[in-house]
Image (cartoon, rainbow, N blue to C red; front, side, top):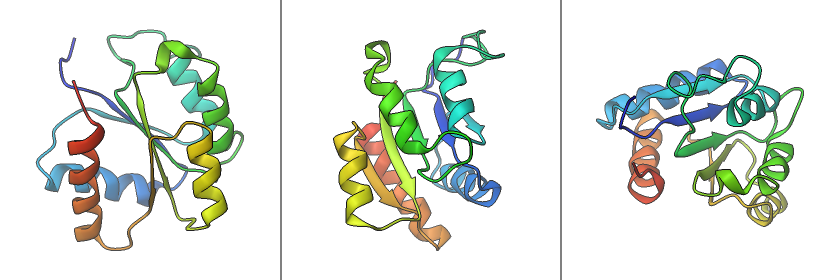
Amino acid sequence: MNSQPTVLVADDDNNDVFFLRRAFQKAGLSCPIVDVPDGEKAISYLSGSDGFSDRNRFPVPSLLFLDLKMPKVSGFEVLEWLQKHNDLARMKVVVLSSSNLQSDMQKARSLGAHDYRVKPADIDDMINMVKDIAGRWLTA
């Protein structure tokens, strides 16, 4: 089993996932990154159901990057689901959204998000954000 912390990315935008992976690489962070395309799959992954039961292949993540606006199940709904699962309380949740609305930020934090970041448009800003988040929230 990999001793490095795993990062789960729940985002329906393949470009955003690509640039986040690239930012981790450019920041020199080699932790495993798993991505899922919607909140429903995020919940399946986190609960170890629907093909994600092998915890050697799909370890419980140390960090979850969570988009808010996704199909099937929203990021807010994932946060609500997480509140009911104390076994995942050690996992850090960073909302990474294109929304800079204060109401979205407040709602995400009230539902247990540890951090809220607006998706950077520039790769250098994304790299700096990843370094900051990893230093703050990513622990083995």
